[in-house]
Amino acid sequence: MEVAAAGPRRALIIHGWKDDPSSGWLGWIGRELETAGYSIQAPRFEVAEKPILPTWLATLESATTWLEGGEQTLIIGHSLGCFLALRMLEMYDFSRPVGGLYLVSGFYDAPRPEASRWFSPEPNWSLIRSRTSERVCIYSDDDTIVTPDRTRRLAHKLQARLLCVVGQGHFLGSQGMNDLPELLESLEDLGFTA
Image 1 (cartoon, rainbow, N blue to C red):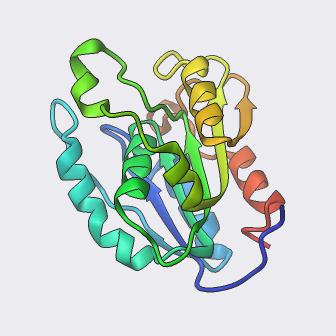
Image 2: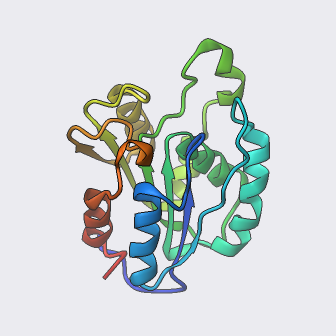
């Protein structure tokens, strides 16, 4: 399905734990989207020994009114930022569905039993699907932090397109992941950057 140009072009970029939304591929995709006419919000979350999900969700709250929803709006998440995107989509009813939800190394389940309280209950999949028009999950075949099976399960729950990028690990800018052309290509294919 190709997305028709309509409404303001806005993108929310949600980084993962101990990440920087202005560097690596996250900063790169932000610059690419700005070149394509998007306004960008990429909040930086408080760094702590362990992520503080309620605090991070509160940080995202102001972005929900700015984002508005609509065919030319995007949410791009990485790692823990994907889970935050899912919770945000459950909590806030945009005026229109978000055009594209892109989740890179995404997951919805607790990585360890002691973290399970943050990941319960399981996201409301039908609600999230109703609040997004296009959904794409991207994973690497050699990701040891969020294993490929976890992202595949997420894609199944979301009824999302699934894209495998070979040999990119966890897509960490700190490990030299400075761009993600497969993401930009998918955005182009679905008409978001045309």
